[in-house]
Length: 256
Ligand code: SAM
Image 1 (cartoon, protein in one colour):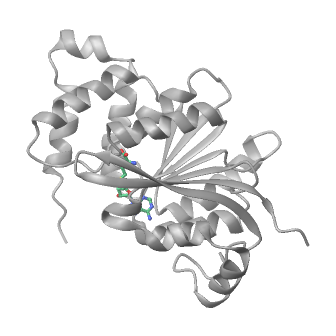
Image 2: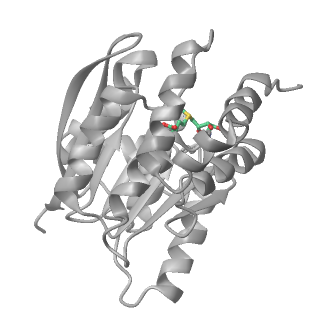
């Protein structure tokens, strides 16, 4: 199957071929790059699947509250969310943003956008299926980071049918632990009801679900039924109507 990248190429070309005065004015300034993207998208006769202004701001607020050291996103696309959220980590030299993207062409395009925003030192794109990158990232953190700890903040925004499978991967690898905040996009549009049900479920439901439903991303990633979540679906108006994000806080484990 041939994939048409015309609209994504137009997005990147537009940003990189702005008149030099404008380009120099936004280079190294994440907010200005985001604004240039908004300006371009308003005039484009097509939809770009980035998180966008209103849902993005709600997530920025959560990041500001959490102040993550390790933030991970599943689904980079053209780097909009990596720039919008990665800039929030700038004040903390120890904080880093990992963006997982399966499509190497999108990853290449996103790296140009992230570079333009001056965030290449803060954001690392890992190319490949999220499941594989999560395994690799865990190894990297164990080796590189002094005193491995779980992810502080995860933005889940790849394909809805992979939300639960990849959450089970993160649970199994202990990348989600008490204190981790998970935010998942597209809960209403196109919809991720199974994910919302999973994170809002009581441990007994998860125990049965994880025993019965094989993980499409690897049988070994059963998940952890005993992780406790406090989760809510937050509706947000955006350009196409009302969508929602699921905001989930890992609060502890079931007492044995
Ligand atoms: N977070 C981006 C933003 O707000 O700018 C938008 C992400 S877009 C909705 C979804 C992205 O997830 C696409 O670029 C797609 O290639 C990627 N994707 C799909 N399946 C994936 C997987 N298994 N692992 C990693 N990335 C995946």
